[in-house]
Length: 306
Image 1 (cartoon, rainbow, N blue to C red):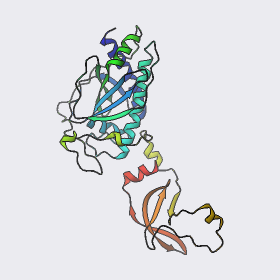
Image 2 (image 1 turned 180 degrees about the vertical axis):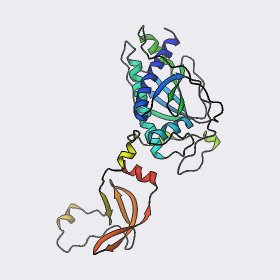
Image 3 (image 1 turned 135 degrees about the horizontal axis):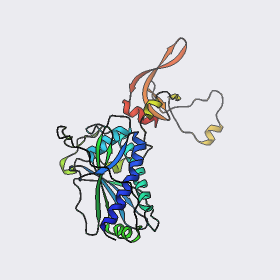
Image 4 (image 1 turned 90 degrees about the vertical axis):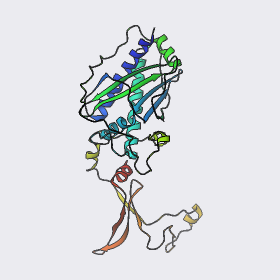
């Protein structure tokens, strides 16, 4: 079998990934032809295969930004400032999409195919294709967002395995025609800034270091609105300390426990054991209350609830 067999398998893989994107975004998603993205910031998603070889996806940083903005309930702004919420949602969504992509490939093989843990990286441009590797570029056409080109690539070891064990008839949904391009709409220019840090330098490739971000549960569209009515316990923490078991056993009525806070220092206001704000004690109608004196940003507060 030839390279065309492997590209057919990659088309089947992206069709499966489109199903995940459709469910997570709550929008219609189809697979269409595309050209490789031209960007100075390329995110790389590597998925090692346990039988040998590696499946890699390359996407433009600005496209990934818009995609993640939809995931957290935004409009899909490709120029948005990336927060940790964006990165968390993007990482988990792409982990799911790559996993389903492997399922799509495996369904068309005579041998089992399993993936290991995803690895994330960055490139200043799309790398040159190594001899024996196979690359296929298609795009997710997302309603209300536009095209999201995805460059899929398998290394020589995986390409040889796929070509050897592919079914004679590869089952994949047809690729939709390429959408009309609106040349009057300017493409987003330049790299996407990172929230909470200095602007990346040209030498660093102006890319977001996704590999340093922790993986957390992604938020489906509408989840944020639903969360607004969820009751959560709010705790005001006066302070913390540690004591040995012997000291705890020796406690009696009247014992004094020293806490790790100075008198007059702001108290922590916590939800889910995460600090969302700080404040000072007040008395209201003979009951204690707390006046908020410091509060985290809305993004940090929502992330703290997760």
